[in-house]
Length: 197
Length: 197
Image (cartoon, rainbow over all chains, first blue to last red; front, side, top):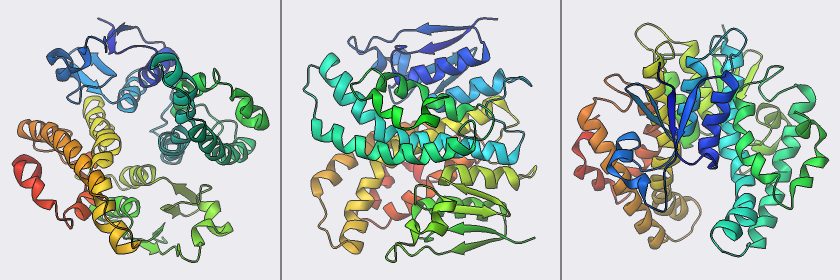
């Protein structure tokens, strides 16, 4: 069977979200780079994969998908085993807690953390723009409040959704990976239960 | 059995997302208002329900949930029947398409449409702030591009995820409902397949 294909640069956090899941389930896959400088993401070929002209896109045989969280969940469902069940959709309460903390990543954690990654890494290194320190400082204050809630949660449970690793945890990897390359990585030292897993 | 409880003002779009799903599955429920002026959302009782002090929150017996999309999915799973299966998690491809268009609502449709609702309704009517016409105009341009993609999709399929109604469609109701009370409601007339369902 042909391996599934992920379209987009692997360094993008949204592409990485899909790749982390593919690695976690041990699936065979191929990454097809999309050249943004050549506007390949707006090409007719790519618009068939993603009508909004964004990345990632995904192909499994004749099935085309886009939106990183939707692709990731497809991967986790398709390759689910008794040992690797990261969505827990067979258990009403566990699935709900996976969903809760997946949404927290999307709507609370990422919006606090990602501006720091943009201002400290992406803007200066890739776009030649200066770091806006006001944005960084405001985001750090927001992030501290978010991490206080995470610290309390992870003092009571081994992982975000409960005492089992899940999609909710994996979702946090891509942006946190880049955050750890900013000058503010030591912030996590104040939250030992967050840092541990 | 005690009815499930939804905490938060019913006029909030995120609370409405949950209520639409409860109505769709015909579940018995109770809405418990949260008084924002009295800072009830930051009270110790509410922080147990939602550690970020936001609404909605949800209670089903001893299970407490927050994040509207997570609550909504719990409701749709719990009350799923052969007739009313709005997540289609038993079908790999259908579930993926429900997820794709649910994510599009969260990350593309709402970010284009919601600033218009804020500027035309919420700011002038609830906060005594003037409408920022630049924001409205920019958002309308974004929304037109989004609606072009929706029009193409809904010319090929009866509903967003395919030829079956799903959570993806329901997600669009709360903000679109308020958009229809703005002076820009007629925008949808240019997209007949979007307007129809």
